[in-house]
Length: 139
Image 1 (spheres, rainbow, N blue to C red):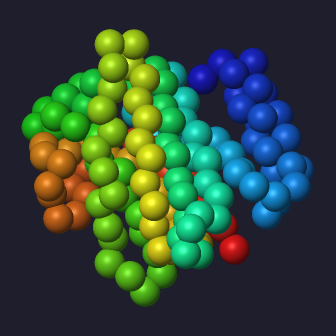
Image 2 (tube, rainbow, N blue to C red; image 1 turned 180 degrees about the horizontal axis):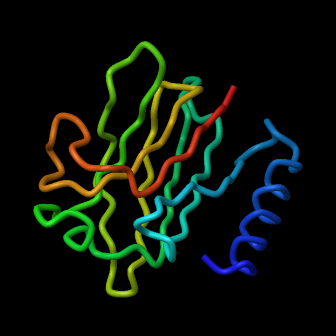
């Protein structure tokens, strides 16, 4: 990753941290793995209906999943929360411009969002290394 790109990411992350938490929708950068240095991702979240958390994951410049794992055909988004089994919340499909988005709702308030390349959207647990992670605190 170039110095300028790293600097831009750092400035954006600090800007998002300074934004007033708890005031509507919050957005933060996801951490990309070393295998996907050009990829960028964000996770946006806010308190939704019935005290759930509404979440949107957006990615761009993410390579097709088969480039990261030979058996992979799709990216799966997972929610990991303390004391709860990891849960698949959906498949993140990329368009022809290598851009993807997934919206989902979870009952969790504090959790980690993980994106992994997988052979199927129905795998019971992550089987490959994460390409993106982000810790969310929506309390």
